[in-house]
Length: 377
Ligand SMILES: [Zn+2]
Image (cartoon, rainbow, N blue to C red):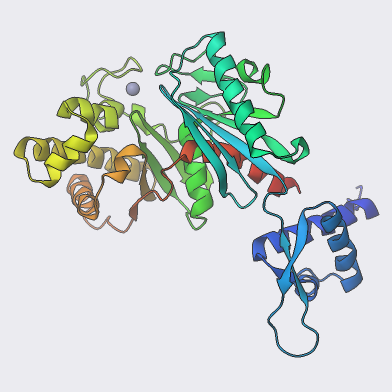
């Protein structure tokens, strides 16, 4: 059997990668601490640090406050050594962000451009993206790529849409963008991108159903700290679970989907008024609106109970509606879930609101390239 032996060059690259990651994950760290942590000699660490500094990936950040003797210098990663861009395409808006290696949003902007599946639309938004990139003033060599989150389901390879009945974008392919944008680009499912940003912010999440309560509902299933994907579809397409057999017609063509009862659009339509006004009425105790909200919470609780019966996980509520949800609504939801559950002891899961509502889809899309860089560095 052939022995798998690393060459000297491979070991050097591996050491450099480990040193970079040690600095990245520690924030600031001294040469001595790296040497101790990775069991590498000081000259090896020094040589790699010099190379990482020459590549402008790492810099000296300060002096260690440790006492006694000569105080060692601390090294840190240059957060914007590489950056990625994220775009979120919705029915009436396009959001663009630039994100650094720490996952921090550097710049962001929103354009009110209505989606149209025509060449002039793609040209228009690509021009806006290019203009945004130029205005950020980063050398091309520092740009990792552009993640493009779209409403609808995307092929595993991220090169085409496979289901897009909201925007009627099922035939959109990556080339619609790359003919204008000369950077690495990938298409991403919007709910998955938003869940990815949540995961970035809350790295302690293990198993969770991320329910995106946007105008149209979306979702993503997180298992073992990463988004669970299938060979064709992503997981967590909660919006098309049947909640009410023979119920309201959904845009997917079926009846009674979660989308038709729990999306922000379905609530606004039931209320017959904008969400701001609706929640004002609910909070001031208006009977009609309070009843509509209560019915909504019952439907959402049923959907959550169904999810919990399949996967024993936490529940994270994100998207537009989550910004209106109060702590008492979470308590009511938990109570309704328990009422619908077969198991009265089944109440130990966590239910929380998302921490990442603003520009979540676009930021998550940019993080695709940030994670890729950090995996491969
Ligand atoms: Zn449906």
